[in-house]
Image (cartoon, rainbow, N blue to C red):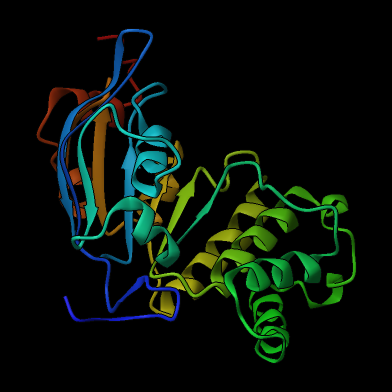
Length: 251
């Protein structure tokens, strides 16, 4: 991996792909929630993480982003640790975490923390607001926006950081169809800028619309990973087949 060093001494990566998990485990209360997951994820427009409630989807994203440490195994982004690679990522949650500031100030603050000069911040903020269709709401308090507007603001803030990968945890779970459509359009626009996504969803229709690859988890174990077309047309495991048919997975 070719790289250079920034002034703060941290290596700057041309690419943080592939993401490589080796025998990753996470245990809580003596129970394995992520169970010896080994996975090599190449750059793909959208890798969708699927599975029933409690399968470990959100937990896996948090592990890959370094928000929580694994109980065992290793996670590397093209040789970088999760801590070193976090600079090249952004994560958006089901419920956006927004500051008590305007929509514009939310994006500007994230850029300032990242060390972007003020002159560059102004252009980046305007561009992000335009991308998200939020220019008319730039001065509105972020926390009084609608749920869909808040999620688009969270995505715009993440996109403004120019990450190589966006980790998205159920970004449309609580939105109505119109707001979901607006978020999906924004995600497609972000993809066109070169950012890659790893995303969880319970919406199989959304997964079919957006996914290029699918990772399927069941009770913390990785059962399938491959192209979305193959997964939806011919799942290899009985658990995945049951999931796609809408049957409950108890064991």
